[in-house]
Image 1 (cartoon, rainbow, N blue to C red):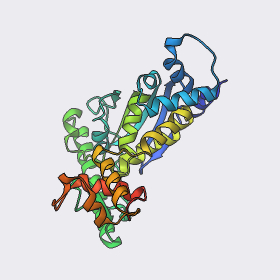
Image 2: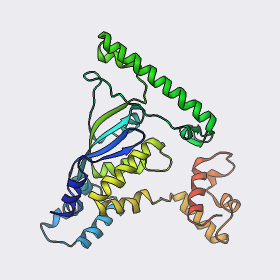
Image 3: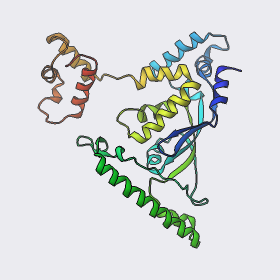
Image 4: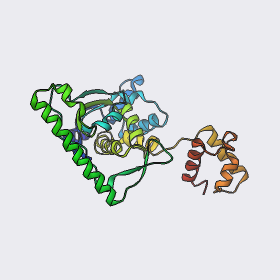
Length: 295
């Protein structure tokens, strides 16, 4: 049995927990690292290549964004996820999806619960993000009220069903924290795009936990070479725009490195000058700081 086949059989239907009652489980997979390399070599006909050859080829494909060979591999997973997180997830339209239907079946009796220390404050600089946490007293109050609301909503739903209200109508007041389940099938190229956005540090924490679980627990064992290349050239990499490259060149030519923030502002692109707020400039500063070029 090949190492990929052994990993597939070991992982199949294993439920990896996420959040308080969610999970991801591998249903099936097609292809492996060798299949990606084989697809890239189709123009050259059949031939035997070593694993080290496959590694170099796959890393070349990832490095130069030759994505079609990665589309030759697929995974299918079963996921249990809160509906509010699923709303973000389903925006990735490059997968085949079949979701649990509450028109035909009774809604899953589970909701995503928030621990007292897990309530996050709204970020001041990013309208769709969060920063910091509430203190324990307020967190406990929020968790208690959440539990009461979820219990009341469930009781209302179950009473409607008991009275014979159509399931498609009885469900309308269920909270978005209610869990749903779905089969999700996607090729490796589009999966890496999903993971690059949803494992990224600015992604919402809840969907980031799902993405990280899929990447580390399922994709890495099945496609170790391709996943390492994804981490090295995508997830763990950063790009430099033309403006950022020119800023680095001006800094290197006129300032001792590492430069100061004032030096960076002086050498930054002219379009950034005089702006009180500029996200492009701030992101450039963050990149150069991370590279050790600015302190």
